[in-house]
Image 1 (cartoon, rainbow, N blue to C red):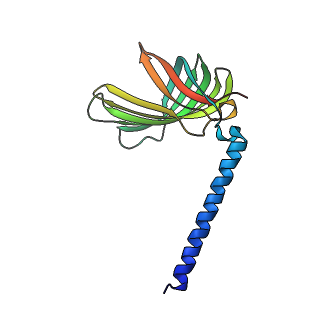
Image 2 (cartoon, rainbow, N blue to C red):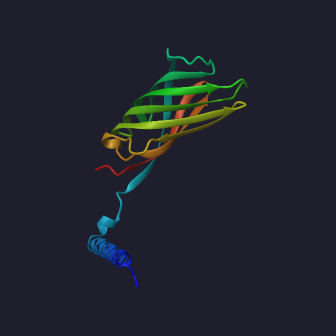
Image 3 (cartoon, rainbow, N blue to C red):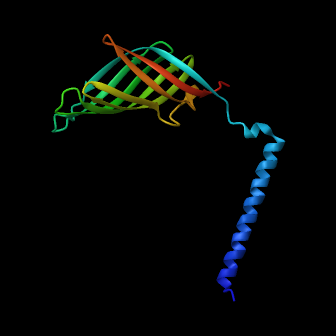
Length: 175
């Protein structure tokens, strides 16, 4: 014989399964009657590029370890991105020349191909024997204004002492 507890659990499972089926049926019927509900907001993939200037300022609250430091970032972007970038960077050097790492968070405010707003970039870089690897990505859901919904990755190029960027990004279509 089944205990009352076992029967109650079985009845509860069947009720939950029935409710889930009814919910799925409702969603399917809603999408069938209005196909626009099934489509996500269209994203447009874009490319932006241009030069930028950067000023890196060591901060006063230095670590007791000379290999660790914190810097303020102040950038001016030009080209497709006309904006300022303000941020904080943490760095770690090593005893081996040409090796180290940095992380940074940077808020970019201005216009991107005519759309105004701001977004946040997350930097993670390392250098081994002079070979640099860098990842700069848009922090999810950080876009504001006409840049709400932005996602993407930025490549920073340093050549001949000059800085430039290549930015691959997606944005919902302008309304």
